[in-house]
Length: 295
Length: 259
Image (cartoon, rainbow over all chains, first blue to last red; front, side, top):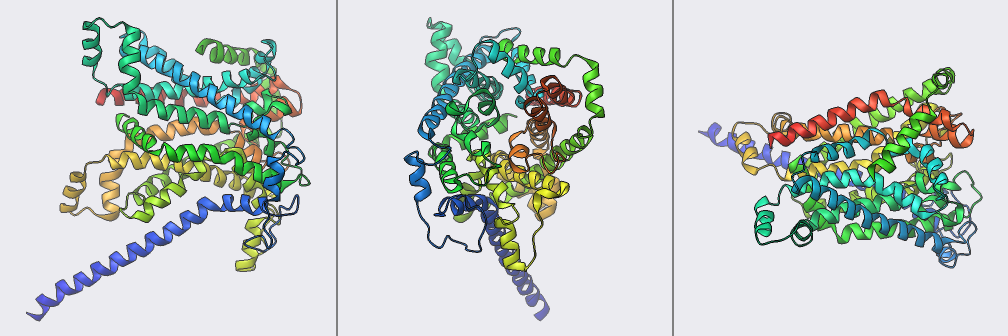
């Protein structure tokens, strides 16, 4: 009798112990993840808040003894060396990013509409050809690109970068949009056609509104690609017209550069996409989910 | 559009690198072979470790706790951050007197190594930075996929006695296997073309021993003004890349049929 009673109790205790252990384990894992994710960001702030220029060494203080916003001030007023054109470059980043988004969404949605809705016989071929682009990584094509843009007379022109970014963002856009388009029933198109809608009207009135979540994802993807890319702007643009993404990397062997201002610029630069991502995170989550289940 | 911006540059690349003598020169270049080894290690280790950790972590983030949800928001920060800026930050962290060595000596009294003076340490740093940057993205993908697994499957598995590791091996993993494979292939293709990480973290140093094909091609083309050789270096990866892309396309198609 006593054995029978003791057993469940011991089992219960063991169960409780295990739950406490899992809980403790996940807290520890959480702390590890936190440190892992934030250390480089913390390092950026450490350098940016240092009042002295070019102080990249770690001096044993977990927080700068006298943090100053000098670095940030120098960036915003464009006083820092190498950052004389900060706002111009920032505007350039913005321009390239926004145009890339617009073109990618436009081309991607038209192509995916054609492939998935118009019942083209060669439709899947087009989608596959676009996917095949991935066999050739973007960075491998930089040399021919550079030459070609030069011969088109587009060297040091933001449009050269835009063309490159749109090219490399479109295949993924078509893939995501096509997967998402399968969730929209064909009956809707047919009904609209019966009512006399043209293909363009079906595209504008039915396809686009229903695809909004997927289009948001494609837009974010294209924006991050264009905003964060280093290689293409660094090669295709001259210093004055570069995007901000490039500036820090260009000087990276120069320890005498005003690194506090450099890091301050880097922090200013990385904030907009992060903010955007958090604003739109509901869309991102929803659409990634649909994309993954369709795969 | 596709024709003008992909096919034409690609054809141009082939045309630039048409001479067989270029490849002979490439192979006789002492930095080419180490670069191939580096690329294999960078892609092989980087992609697989990242994917596996992402799969495990996606399970962790499913735990229904408010603070884990909040942690997920912090965790995806690296993905949203510009790669160049993050890499520069890592570069300074791993300097001789950078943050990492500072912390090592303060906590454990170890004199940290000079990370970028040793080929393997530098390569390892590159891989770690790469994982830091790209793991969150794939974690979110797996997280989204796992949320869609119906609860009843887990319930019935639990009735049959599958919990913990066994549940992961016999239930979760088979369900996600197809997605996992697709993502790994896609990520492999993307990673071979990863230029920024290697270029900005180790810079290819010491003595050009940590180059991968993407940075070596860039180095030939823009530092030593041998564009044709640079293109040839990049194109030498194609015999591996094209089959991967074809498998990926096939996979995508068959999984479409299954649904």
